[in-house]
Length: 149
Picture 1 (cartoon, helix red, strand yellow):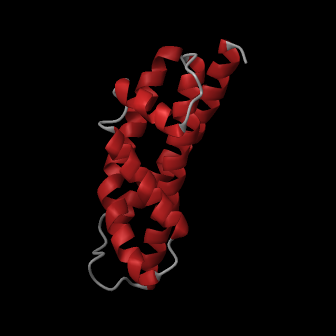
Picture 2: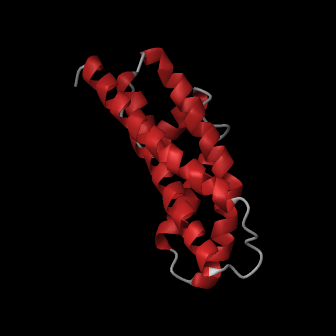
């Protein structure tokens, strides 16, 4: 793949991310007002479930698509997901490798959690980490501006 083709893929992935960020922000604005310590109404539970899916989607896009696309454009060895995350940290896109690992762990809990009683703790984590995920995404989009996307 040529550099121009790689930049084209990165551009497409940034557009996908921006669309997903709109919906994540929208859900977060609704859900940040919910008292998750109480019994959730069905409507509030639905809103939190929607936020959960959107959090997981943005997490996947930034880690699986964007960080890897940046590596491709910058001619980095493909390596593992952890290698991409470490490079993103060196570029200042994430505060720490641990921060993005925590986001990844929450994403995995969202995808694999089936016990309703455990969801309340996951919802709390999602609300706590959504601002960090949004910050990572905005830093990454700004970083990619140098490629005139």
